[in-house]
Length: 203
Image (cartoon, rainbow, N blue to C red; front, side):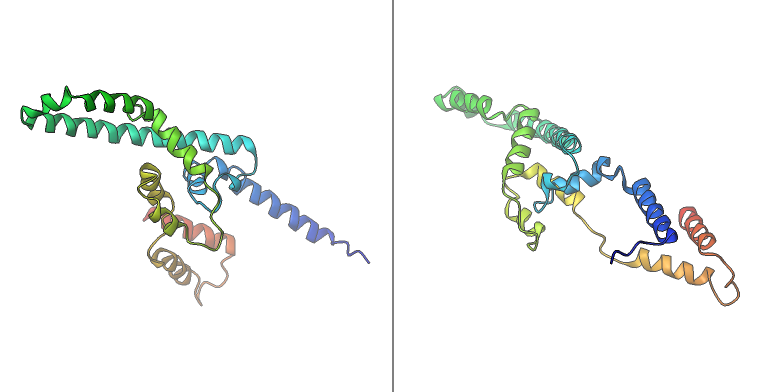
């Protein structure tokens, strides 16, 4: 026998789906969230609902890594110029050697001088690796590959971090306890939620 839900249950289901869509419908477009999904080796590109959002997230990740690479390469050039200015005359002899020409050609081939190429290679190489089993620790995986993906590792430390304390959450419960007490038991849940929201945003 098929159980047909009552009109009230059907209405509640429709309301819940509508509210979830309103709050989380475009969550994959949020740059911090989609970068966190891509940088989790257990999910990567499999964590997206459709191909368009997956492609947009990968493109945004490469652009983020490109900007980080450009900053690090700029600081690296400044440091190398400073060290070259303080080096001995033997540096000119080394630069005119056979190895100098070889190293310059090698830089062109590997794309070390181009932040865009470096970011594309690093991201594509990371995404091509097999997914990590879900029960394993992604932070351990990243620690082992820190030297292979230096820029992605740096970004991962910002995206896959968690709060080290539960104090903010406990403060919300304490606030609710102060507002809803024995002398104010007539407060509706919607009004209580609004009061807590106002207090936490006015702090």
